[in-house]
Structure formats: structure tokens, C-alpha cells
Length: 176
Image 1 (cartoon, rainbow, N blue to C red):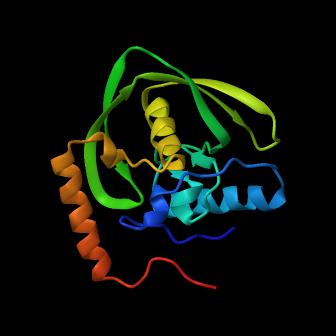
Image 2 (cartoon, one colour):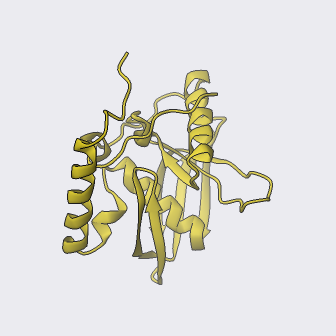
């Protein structure tokens, strides 16, 4: 396993729509394991493949609290098939938008269908933090960032800040 460099705002890669995974095979599962290692290292609770420069519809989540046994989850080709009527607000952050947090309102419950590590079709009913995290990461697969759910004024300020920071740092991706 290896830690991959994270794609950081304002990189246009984050706005790409990811392509469906056509085959669950050893290279894909290695990427999933690398994504988990990258997420744990950051540290974070969710990571979409596009955040490490891979435009594939795949994400990893681990909501285990510090001191608890890791509980990694892999979602391949996840799709929200149903959302609840109730709404909830969570303060969200993103590994691709470091050190910025904002309250985001989303459906409190979702049903998601996806493929697991074995390529088997699964369905999960999620609520609370898992529902929020799934929606946040699936948004990534569609080129949507959590800042797209906040006011235009706040979003513009965040994007401006990250554009300035990008000018002051070396490129975030290694070529080759």
C-alpha cells in the first residue's frame, strides 16, 4: 500500500465526473487500499478516487473513532437510489479543501446501492454521519464539492483563498 498525493482545490480535476468501474480486479482493489492508507494518513473519514487523481466511481469511508478498531468500507459505483424527507446539518470538511469547514444541510437518510470488494451488488440504508459522508463522497464522483452547498459569497471566498494558496505552492501532483 502507498499514500497518494491529494488533489487540492482549485485543481480542475476535482470537477471531473468520474467514470463507472467496469471490473473489480486486483489493480482496483490495490487502489482502494492505497486510498484507505491515504485517508488514514490525512487523517479523514472518507475519500473519493478522484481526490487522488483517479476519475473512477469508487470511494472509501471509515467512521471508526480514535481508539476504535478500523472499520473500512469500500463503495464501487455507488448510487443514491432513495433519500429521506428529513434533513440534517453537519459541519463538513474535505481533504481536498484543507482546514476549511462549513455547515451543510443534506437529507438525513439515504439508500445507496454499490458493488463491494467482491464485485457483488449491495444496498445500504444510511443515516447520521454515514449518510452525510456517503452524499459528500458521491458528490465528488459527480464533480461536486461540499462548498457548492454553501452560499455563493462564502464559496467564492474559499475558492479565492485556495487559488492564492495554489500560486504560492509547488504543484500537488507528481508527473511520471
